[in-house]
Length: 162
Length: 162
DNA sequence: GTCATTTCTATCGCGTTGCGATATTTTGTG
DNA sequence: CACAAAATATCGCAACGCGATAGAAATGAC
Image (tube, rainbow over all chains, first blue to last red):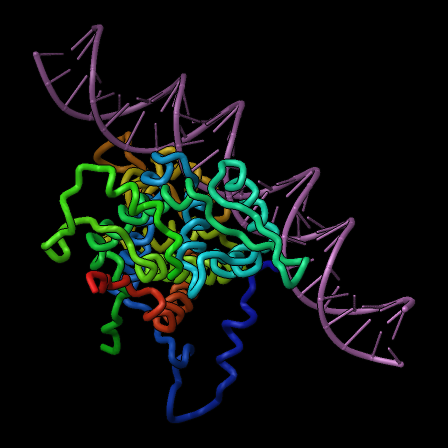
């Protein structure tokens, strides 16, 4: 896809307003060393959390994606199930990738496919008993870990403008 | 809410756990529907941020891991370079996986390997001009996005015990 | 009603990624 | 000088997500 895409990031420069901002990046001044460190530290925090999650979850026979699938079901707003499309949105995956993930989880008796009564195209996905039990145990561990990593996972505040 | 989720409460009963914890916030009580939703919402936030990052970065010819590699270099505390082992720690990868990642980035002229003057086993990795330029542009976009997603990325607070 | 179009889910083949096992070189220790 | 430990790198492998594609069901136009 496209070589060096400089298209849309440069497009902002077309603003010829004299007084307000003469900077190349209007609301986007260059980053300081501190900014880079803050950005890197935050990403480091995410990586560490995901690493903890992966290790924990694999220790219980699940892949990271499977855990997230189960969590998305039990944690779905208002209900305890979701359609394939809804799950795709929540997992930020393409619908067909989500379908594959569901199939793999189904083979391990973690989730179940149920036809939608109103729309025959739609498939509802819900947790099995085994899936529910495993998820409960793993989620408790995650909650504890999240508590420990609260500061490491806080979004940086930019004290630039100096 | 659905009173269906009785699976985990059963599990708790069977274990030698003491009766309802009188101490708030110290034990590891079962999760409520709210807790699951909070956990899922947080993971959803992370996924959305990483999805934004991946799309943005790929639009500029990089893989997500490559961006994180560049960021880890420029954002490394106190210096602008790091050894392979240090990068492995920051990226939460095995050292040999990190070496492969570096090799790929090197082929795209994003980073450079420099021998360590003190220890001949050690390899220092630093940014090239092209890598630095690309990173600066991408990091600005990430900072802006992080600002927009601040609330979505905040670690949940557990108001259970209610 | 009929047909075209859109929506929702699923299958297949592929490229990328990170890992385990293993190897190579260098450092430090006796 | 062996000899173990450390740092980096190579190879084969399996898992994951995607693009392309497909099919079934719902929706809309006429």
